[in-house]
Amino acid sequence: MTNKRGFNVYYLLVSEGTTEFNLFAYLTKNKFRLLFDLSNVKFSPKIEITEAGISQGKLAGVSDIKGFKAKYALIRKYYKGQKKFFLLDKDLDDSSKIESLIRQNHDIVQFLDCNSEHLLLKLAGKNPRKPSSFKSMSEFRNYCKSEFVLQFRKVASDFKDTDFDSIFSKVSDEKIKRIFAELFSVLS
Image 1 (cartoon, one colour):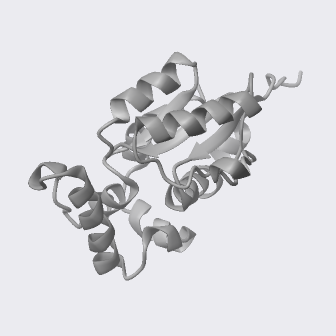
Image 2 (cartoon, rainbow, N blue to C red):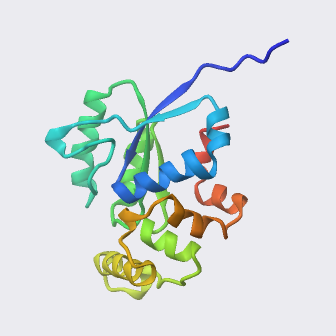
């Protein structure tokens, strides 16, 4: 008797930018490739909305709820009825409003705590400063970007699989799955 695979479940991948896109690709196509290949879940970054600056599912940054709402409305208009999976930094003042908007429309969001640079620094054991050490989230974001370059000698968007390997090889699979709980929840 053969095992039947269920129907595939498709998600449009929407990432904040290149770093988040590369991190997602590393996790799903490298680190946990077999797990995702054996699942019935498929992701596609084929969202293209040139008037909003969205290419290959990359939002080219999100600054606040107003900017996110405008891009999200276009995504929902052009890709109506399709499930969407968002990978975003959680260092915006409006992150909770963005999360509510995404979830109320039955889409999924995986936030990176606090942002991709901070998360990677933390996982690499670099002990980055916490957001509470700064007067504003803008200062915190700038610190994370400059500290990342200082520690890794490149900007986060230039990270390749070998760079991610050097960080994630030191972190247990269970911890990675906890950090990216929303991502791994779609496999259930």
